[in-house]
Length: 242
Ligand SMILES: Cc1cc2nc3c(=O)[nH]c(=O)nc-3n(C[C@H](O)[C@H](O)[C@H](O)COP(=O)(O)OP(=O)(O)OC[C@H]3O[C@@H](n4cnc5c(N)ncnc54)[C@H](O)[C@@H]3O)c2cc1C
Image (cartoon, rainbow, N blue to C red; front, side, top):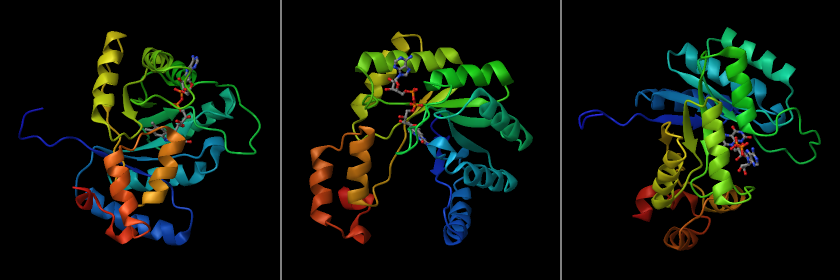
């Protein structure tokens, strides 16, 4: 990429849960189309809770002439359900997806036939060859359930070996962790592009809660600035943190 080219970006949506949310998303999409992103991705509830909404949102974006990728988690899934879903994606003209393990929602008992995302990636490649550009998730600050940072890195390398095309990180506010992760992954031969996931700060308590759950560290300087805003979400914006 030369200095006159813009950095490629993508945007992640979660599928709207209400008709009002769906209406709002149409407007947001139009605004973001103007930035000409490489693609949009749409999250997916583990256990298939937002499965229909994910596909519908992806289809609407494709219809508008932009590339869109469903997130696709395998926890609780079987080979038969994944095969059906892959056929649905192909029928819808989908060429890219974010393949994940997902997390079991509370009260959801069955683990399914896939234990890790690497098994899903391997299955997708075996079933559909090169039909999809497969993104996977990765964790510069280590996945919260990993036995150790090294074990997590090895798990990531397995996803790459299984056929991942590129990776999107969990968001982070500590850029050293990202560069370290990329260097360490390269040492293991995992050299696919690793795209930093960026979380814009709009709601302090939501960010704290979500970061505790996903293992993203909020540096003290950001935490203390956010605490000073309290619940005044209207005042929280990136420029306020500068
Ligand atoms: C960019 C991005 C998008 C996301 N989108 C969604 C979404 O739409 N819906 C959703 O429900 N969740 C989403 N998540 C969250 C994700 O589902 C959770 O973080 C989940 O806990 C792990 O998913 P994974 O695909 O990274 O799993 P995996 O790569 O399978 O890793 C899960 C855990 O198992 C360990 N592990 C993996 N393989 C092995 C092995 N062979 N032996 C031992 N341990 C192993 C890893 O170290 C890690 O601790 C997203 C995460 C990211 C980074």
